[in-house]
Length: 224
Image 1: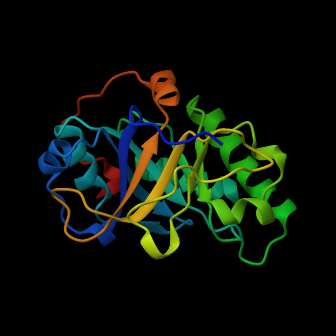
Image 2: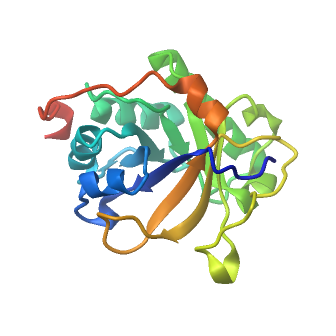
Image 3: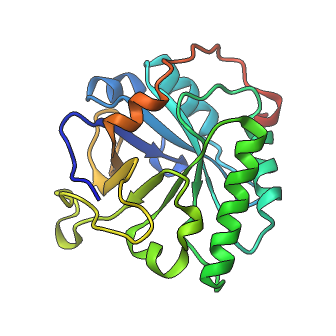
């Protein structure tokens, strides 16, 4: 897959684990986008998702949400839960399926879950989703059936995670990544502790860039 490029877009991903975030400071540190954890499985709503959404939007960042999947669930039920909690919140980045645990399922079963999840959300929203997973997870858990969806791949540099790889490596399924999470120990102004930092491929960003949707602080009923 392609190498990193200094023209690529700096994107962070966050959840309640990152605590209270000063999004104005985040934006001042060169961050242009944020993926925010919204849901997990069919019951978990991230308690910081709405505050992070409003904060990132007001700071001028492009915002997307990710869903942490449990492949032993019904993918349709997971999508419906995600969309219910999304409510009327406006996204600037594709919805993301975060799939990094196989729960003892076979490669065929994991792939079938991913494809059904992504096909269904695309049909419901008319937005082509992105798939997040770890580099080492790909070979043992996915077939080429997922290749039609953009890849957000995570791979760190072992003993020196803050430095990161020049590229995540190659796969038999994708020849390019849409986004590369190169560290889980990054430092960004406005966030206490470590944070995941990613590069979004500039061509991919340009292909999805519709500008930033302005929002008001009016929590959807699904988030109450």
